[in-house]
Image (cartoon, rainbow, N blue to C red; front, side, top):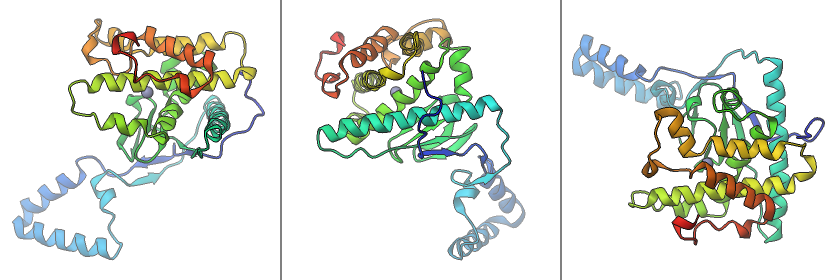
Amino acid sequence: MKWQGRRQSGNVRDARGERVSGSRGGIGTLLQVVVGIFGVKGLVALVAVGFIGWQLGLVDPAALLGSGGTRTVEYQASPEEERLLQFVAVVLADTEDIWSRQFNGFDRQYVEPELVIYRDRYPTGCGMGDARMGPFYCPADRKIYIDLGFYDDLAGQIGAPGDFAQAYVVAHEVAHHVQNLLGISEQVSAQRGQPDYNQYSVRLELQADFLAGVWAHHNRHYLDRGDIEEAVRAANQIGDDAIQSRSSGRVTPHAFTHGTSEQRMRWFRRGLESGRIADGDTFSKAYDAL
Ligand SMILES: [Zn+2]
């Protein structure tokens, strides 16, 4: 993909130097110690002092709970990682241009998402982000979270190397943002708890692959030979059946939440050919026909 020298998005937030402060068991341990030494009265006193401290702005409860606070550390990235960050910023800028135009086409305003680059763990509007989860979009705070270390896995263990495979991953998460703005994600979350919720989730994922394809369609002039194959390979390798057979050695269809590799590739290609949001209705088709 031709990306060097192109516009980088201003919506990338580099949080690699921000570390989650406090350990998960921090406050629990503190309470046990206080009760052990001073009894329950001591605990009541501590809570009272803590409350006053919080009122005065001296105590940050989020930091104590280890859920909201971060501290800043010196972060030294390798030149390759810096290059990757710039690449991601160009891809994000591409998605902004393309989705703004698409939204304008039906008189809607595209609200650009923020993309947070973090390391290891990071508090998000959807709970604690963890690099092991891979890149994800949080509908509650409308942000995309990526630990760039995922790209090592993508090229290595997952077996989908190439810059366009990397770009596809960003485009897929941005697609979830597009679904959020269009109110589709909300309709799907309303089904949570229903017996067929998993099917709604698959439909949502396949549509995100379709929308990533729409993005690629409008980005064609920047593509190099082999780029589409890289993205298709990524869609193939991160299908639920592929992930499950890699991790457990067997495939269990009822646990699918993203769709099979074949489905994911097909919907990506469909978006690539069409370039139109309207052709990506994965919700009205029969589930077996997806
Ligand atoms: Zn997804």
